[in-house]
Length: 521
Image (cartoon, rainbow, N blue to C red; front, side):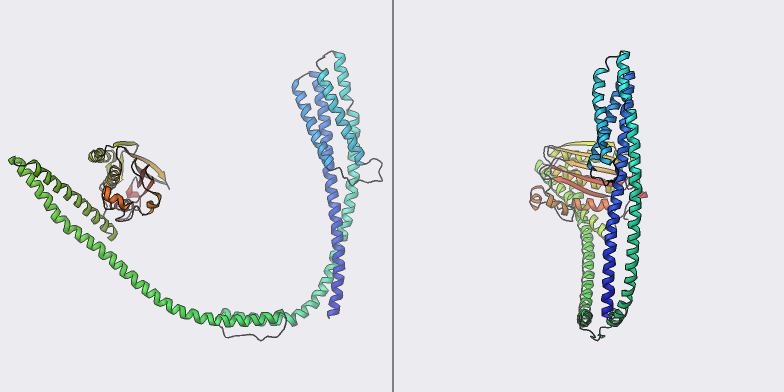
């Protein structure tokens, strides 16, 4: 059986060699046919451009118009390009038995073009002489190209037709040889395939089927099934490797079971820790809320008694300057502490999900004017100048005016605190994004700015850009955190762009009509 297979294999190799030789011959003939076709195309274009140039020259001589000179020059340039491309295809596979070879035709075309180019130069020099005798002489010179060009065109067509027919016959013969070789090779392949199928059945297919059955069992989770090693070749090596894989999978499966048990314990502990963390967070929020309420009561009383003392002392004209100063210090500190407590209370409400919104339509210009009037003393305290630009802002807005006022108070207050002898700008305008109308507020200052590495944690609770600034400028780090929480609550967002020692720009984007936007309630 092996000898027969070897014999058939030798036959297949012979036919394969013959087929490859036939294919190479076919490729050579096909390439020659393509080359001849390209030569015919370029020669036709060259003849056309020569005739076109001669016609334009005749019209130039007859009319003397400059445009025909340009068109004749362009036709000659195209003809020269065609001639250059023909020169690149100078290795032709023409018939040597024909006395009129393609090289002869090529030389005739080249000579005709060179003669026409020379006449073009002569006609340009002589066309100023518009006497009938000169015009007639020049026209005779141009018309002299008609007969040689026509004869050359006919000779080229005759040559290419003959070459095309010869090459088509040779290509057809090469195709028949290829088909015959392929058919013979296929017959031999069928024979050797039949012999190979018998060998495959005995030596390969049965062991592979056994491996397939065992692999199916492993895929179903049976890691106890191993196969019998039947061969000492590659199939036998595959059987041994499969058995090793089954043993390894059995061990890994046992390890995974143990790991799953340990992971289950870890997940349970993580869930318990998460519940404890959530309970601690809720307890923190509840504590902050309760303490804020408890602290606001005595602070309100302190502010009330301070106002009462000031009123009574003013009525009795008994308030000394030092007492006025002390009462002012008490009132300022109490209001500052009350503001901080209100901020803590607001954040705790938002975190607990108990914050409420009062969505209504309000006059945005009036709201901004009120904010400017309130913040002007604070802005001027450090010698700053406040610029308002609301040219692109809407007249009315539907949102929570109290929350918006608090956000703008915080941002302008921050800008005033960290800017000295500078400029603070408030811009408001309407912008469209994602199919919605947004009111965008930009608060820009020329203050101390923020370092790039401090920007990511700027809006975190109880966080300031730099702890050293807390000692210099004061503050708890609640203002920006609260502003971000309020912006999110209103269905918008806030972000900052800043450069150290160059100033900052805080951008607030809120929906123009919060009643049409899904906001957190």
